Length: 94
Image (cartoon, rainbow, N blue to C red; front, side, top):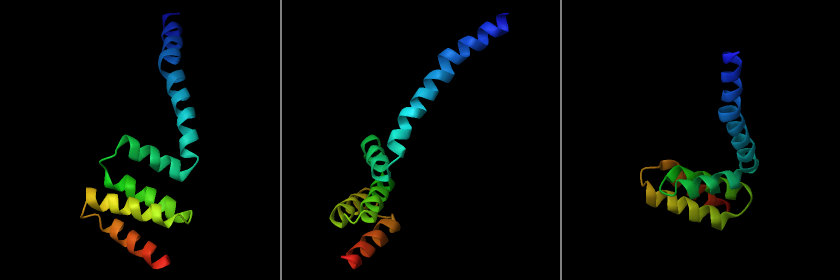
């Protein structure tokens, strides 16, 4: 009986809250620019988030916003070659 009680306690204290959090997070993961915007808000000092947000904007044809985010990525990490390449490719498109 004690094992059953411990299992029920585990489910209510751990499994249900984690399941709810995952369900809430899926709303953000549904849209790429929302995902990367959320990532940038939470990790505003990481270049990769800005680079990926720039990719999301570029995919939607919002090239000016993409270039802004590539520039932010480059400022945060001047060694992130991918941000330079993405910015150059975006300039080439426009």
